Length: 239
Image (tube, rainbow, N blue to C red; front, side, top):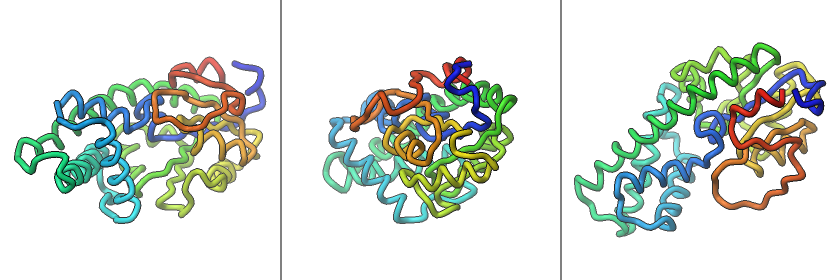
């Protein structure tokens, strides 16, 4: 254990980009499988489609509480492919529409392999500390956690669509801290996003461990987090 975290009584985990991709930004995961599927677009076009899909899902309730993660992938990639077709970046053919399933299949298999490793880490941490999940999600995170055999690993699950608070608002982390019946300085937050996890968690008074993986460029400061890891499996060396 790192002496810096010797007074920690609780651990708050992020989900997307942390437990399901081991620090890789979901845009990078999707782009990998767009490339593997041979989708004939450049990365800038893909990025526009990715952002469009995220904004669409933020405005429209297309993902429902019963949807599994594979369903989420099909919906997301479907929106992206439709955007690319509508903007003349891909032809409207059955072959192009089949990309949705091919990409979703690849991403799902990748996620399963990562979650298998993350589950071991979370379960080890849960034996020593109170644990919570704090995530920006669509209202179906509990369904996904149960499907991935992660639900019982968390004493508390705080989901943005349920509590009405979204990262990077520090209040969502304080909500998690209060739910654990702890004080902010007794909790360490583990997340992959510097701007949505590390900055607001520090503002809330928590300690932070940044899972620094492959992602889109954003302004970062390596001196802000209390520790930096490059794999979720390194967490057990610190706490």
